[in-house]
Length: 182
Image 1 (cartoon, one colour):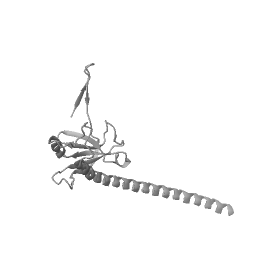
Image 2 (cartoon, rainbow, N blue to C red):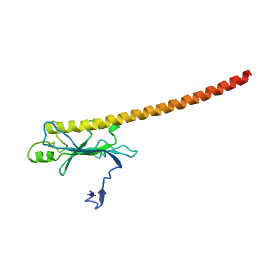
Image 3 (tube, rainbow, N blue to C red):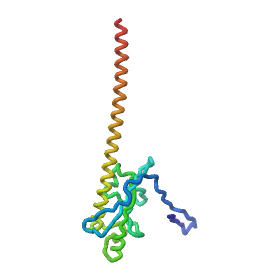
Image 4 (cartoon, one colour):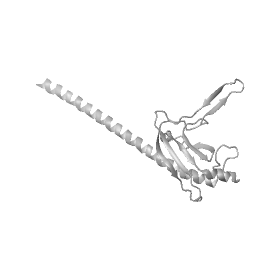
């Protein structure tokens, strides 16, 4: 989609575009189960950006986070409590729940009256966020473990390198000492 931002006073126009980063698909259209809403079938898709830069996870121009979508409406972007977690910094995706739109249209106040996202105290929102949070928590835990493994490997390689250098130095010292004494 292209959005055109027009300056009515100056007459200029700029195209606003969002280019999805190169990414790896982690979760593909997984159906979440909501215990109190068995008829509601939200679907979650999560991707991990592959580039060197992390995604912005806060503010009005954030590039990361999970977009909560119902029919043709985008409600908010969130990482369900992991917005500040460095292990979630590359995550983005979509949580589609068309029932939000349907229930809101029927008069059920799920969307915040100021249109600042979903009402966090609504039972459907609570269950939706809890289900999605569990999936994101699993991904973050995996990312954390991968980083620990990588760090252990680097430490092991570093220790091994220092050990080899120490052996080499000790051999040099021993060679000099043995040659001096005859």
